[in-house]
Length: 294
Image (cartoon, rainbow, N blue to C red; front, side):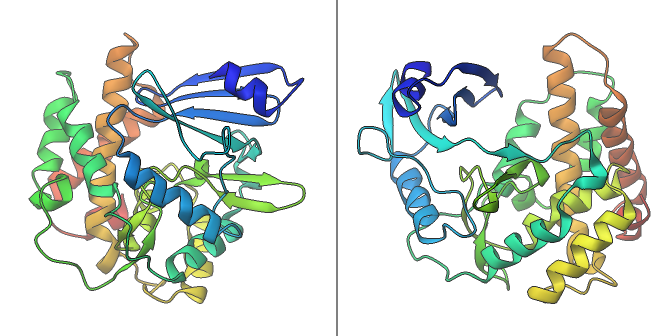
């Protein structure tokens, strides 16, 4: 991967390698090289990459490698991308909530491609539960998961929902980067697909419910999004968002426990907040007021 980056960014120095479990990233100069998860469907990835070319004002377009969008190495699919500046998690007051809402609304209003698969949103919930290790928090998370319908835990979806749009599939503030000449763009298209746009809103909703996002920031984001794509009432979003937000709380908690278990450490403060939110979900059953007040 470093060798690929060096070819695309001559003279660039290898600065960082990120191991994100299923995904490996290496930055060389102004290029990021990405090894996609084992088992990634090459045809689906090709279609997702083509969508970044069509929507380059919303999605960050890829960089060709030797004239091709994808390179295959040791059973992994490799892509390359321009390196930009991500949202700084240590400066929450500077987070681009309005710009994020504008990009997401623009994505959801884009023409729906006929050749894209379903997004990976509910499948991620199922994978997180499948990988959940035994721990003191595990019964709480599984209890919260039991309040979800099977399809929201990665099970088969037997019918299309009432809303159908081009969606990101794994949207959060970490999926934005900025460039001086371009402004903000959405990145990470592994789960891009055709589905319910409310599931893209569910991640910030879940983080708000767990006490991670500031209520004022959540309202800024929600009202700006709804002003551009009125699929939700920003003054009473939970009638629509409660179920996907509940599912994402379960995913966040399960992923947090898995990471802590793998790293042989206790849960940190944010991870504990996810587990506590799952406890409130279970205590509240299917009552949407639980997530609303969490």
